[in-house]
Image 1: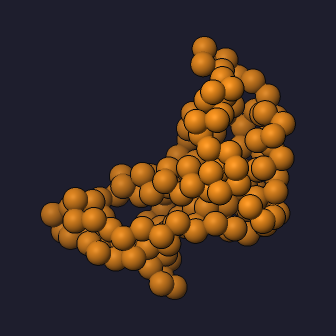
Image 2: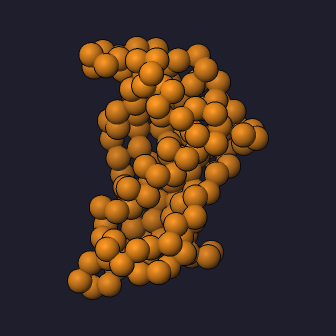
Image 3: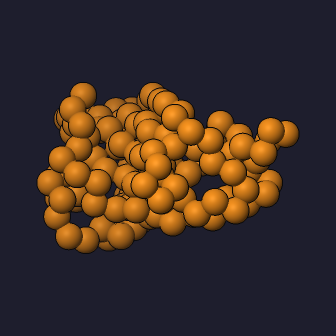
Length: 142
């Protein structure tokens, strides 16, 4: 799957104490929570809140998730979680993420999603969702 053209969206997060481990670092699994938060807000910013998709019987389960860690984040750090769109297929698409503290790259990753019905059956990407994903991918405005 290809990388996004650019990252059009960044979510600001301040690390809460409860997200850190005994070493004082953000616990590794919380990065996936940060990815989810950025994904949700990215779609909302482009007029596609998850609730509206679910109301139309469109679910977007994660098929694969990956995160590569470069440097640790710590309690009270201000993070920017950037989200963008990678490859878009007939049923699947990839969202990409970077987590930064100022200019330091802390982590990067992706989530692959499929478009399925409530019964779990794959279905073609909704045309409106596809249009929004394409617009995000090429850096269009929200």
